[in-house]
Amino acid sequence: MMLKIPTINASTPSMGIMPFSSRKASRFFGTSADVFPPFLLKEMEKIEDPFARKLVSRIEMLPVELTSSKNCIMSSCVKPTVQDTASPLVLLHGFDSSCLEWRYTLPLLEQAGLEAWAIDILGWGFNNLENLPICNVDSKRDHLFQFWKSYIKRPMLLVGPSLGAAVAIDFAANHPEAVDKLILINANVYAEGTGNLAKLPKSVAFAGVSLLKSLPLRFYATNKAFSALPFDTCLEWTQITRLHCLLPWWKEATVDFMSSGGYNVTDQINQVLKKTLIIWGENDQIVDSKLSVRLHCELQNAIIRQIPNCGHIPHVEKPDAVADLITDFVPRQLPDTLSSLPVVPEQEQNLLVHQI
Image (cartoon, rainbow, N blue to C red; front, side, top):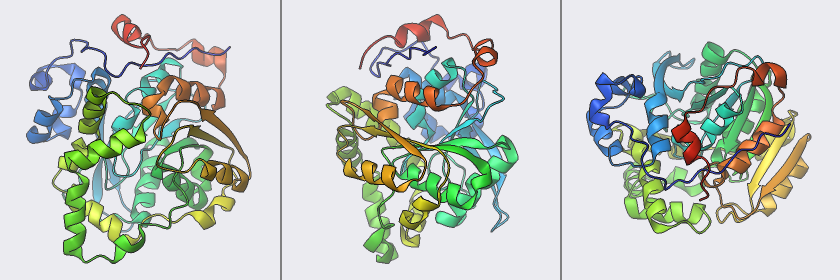
């Protein structure tokens, strides 16, 4: 039976969540006091979006040892509240983003009884990179593999939005044993790496990266990524997207990635044999919709679904539609899963019935 997944209103009023200053006295904030430095917590206090605040409270740090450097990276992630015997979902994020992209869709997936991990890609998100590792494609792949080997340990449904789709394709081509299926959302997989940016002098690269975290540029990018977003919501979402940029190692990690040449997975696409769901927002202004058709043709075992009136990041803009599509795609034993569905608090149920 189809589960009806409602749409979340991103501008709903606060659920009465405690302020971050009370985090040490509240179990609600989990390990947040150990994860975030005080200056970043002060920035998080400005965020009113209850779903972002709730997901922040669930972020934990897990140690992951990289193969190349033997560095142990305290890696930020949101662990699942639901344990499922079927393949777990592993939710990636896009370029220079974080697991907070999944603030609206992750609760819906859990409501549907799915085991879902939201993890930060090495060099982005809230990973602790005090001992800065190399942040190129190889190290990002190795970090994801070591995370999978240490904590997930079963073939996964790997979900990659935007540039995260390139991360997913690169990973599936190199570690097919770790992947059951793929879900690619508004996939940015045909860019030829970072192009000429890789050739910039380091001083120029650092200046450009500093601009990348500026509020005006982030606001412009957020507005372009969504379809007809109200000003107040756009400003709030902009603040959420740049939280991780305030960490002291963000600039060095981003320059390192840009200088390394970035992702170029065009030749790997036809190597991916896993069943794949391609999700596309109809009004994407960042990646041409023709590329979704091309990707559908080049992947050997893919289906494609379009979400109307939706921009580049459907799992933020249309979380109900994305959750529906993912739920339909995930193989599950419904009787066993439904019998263990988590109870959704009444306050959250009320928030989940509004329309954006």
